[in-house]
Image 1 (cartoon, rainbow, N blue to C red):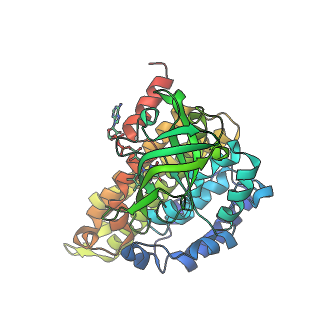
Image 2: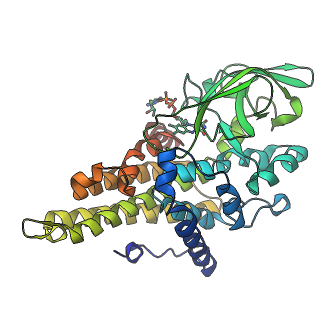
Image 3: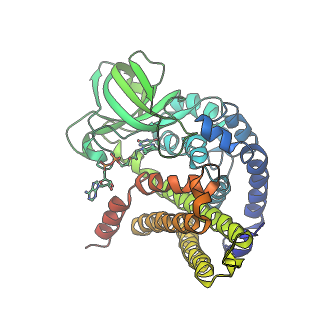
Length: 387
Ligand SMILES: Cc1cc2nc3c(=O)[nH]c(=O)nc-3n(C[C@H](O)[C@H](O)[C@H](O)COP(=O)(O)OP(=O)(O)OC[C@H]3O[C@@H](n4cnc5c(N)ncnc54)[C@H](O)[C@@H]3O)c2cc1C
């Protein structure tokens, strides 16, 4: 087996604690996830007790306030978690298991004490589930233009509209939902916690996805759903801020996953090329093939260095929107390149289901589109540059 860790850049910001966390998670992923992930992906479902087991090692609680059951952590612990989960080579595991990472932070930072106490502890214990519902059939990139309407009626909001592509939407007990409470534009958006069992909530599984098979993805319909006004997260018509608040951490996590998926592709391609013989010698002995590995590693390490510096800047409270946007683009382009090159090296066998590379190749685009698409992030970066 090729030791891919020997190619890893040392992270100057890591302490012994980060390394121990990596080892702990590596054991968890090797024991609880890797042996089963193919079956889960083919079955298009994760086992219900996975959340509880992830909570047992402290994964779900990472970085959340201790008073709600969280475990203290910094951004590098979060990055290690994204990397180690990506080693299983199935993006649906991280997407579903850690979806509270996008749905819960708005509550942590903006919700009332009562909502926090009711929702955060059971989610962090893996007993209950929460999903983020922003995207609509009419569009996902242009959040300021969303249409799902919540009108005020006394102490309640009455919600009507549709959300789609919602990760964890079938399993969720609550939806952190972006709704229109005011005028057009981002100044008319609020965030509302909608219980999934409220009358008028319907959901439909979206199967037949290109990848992320083990992650459930749903369309959610709200038909005159009555929600207590106390479920508002933050101020009315001020919902845009809680939505964007978590973008840095989400994008750093996606970048870390993409880099690790790229490493998995590099590892599988090297292992194949060391065994396979073509034209009388090992595939890895052909210079054209060896160069592919060098070029993959060059891009992986460049992206890793960018990630490490961005994470350090985030820790200092200095991370620029331009950098985190371009980092995510850099990471998805690196993944696209490495997945393509690994498939090419492995050849026809890479086209057959069952390898991590085959799955990662199918999951490239969801990383490049979700969490801020490449076009949207480049545009954001260029606007931040004052162009
Ligand atoms: C598997 C999966 C899981 C998801 N999970 C969730 C979830 O949990 N919660 C949630 O809310 N959403 C989720 N999404 C939705 C995701 O965030 C959106 O797909 C994404 O924001 C893009 O929105 P869209 O698909 O509507 O594309 P659109 O916004 O319609 O854009 C289509 C294309 O046009 C490009 N484009 C758009 N506007 C411009 C412009 N001004 N200039 C140049 N190019 C532009 C985009 O980059 C994109 O390539 C998920 C999506 C998938 C596929």
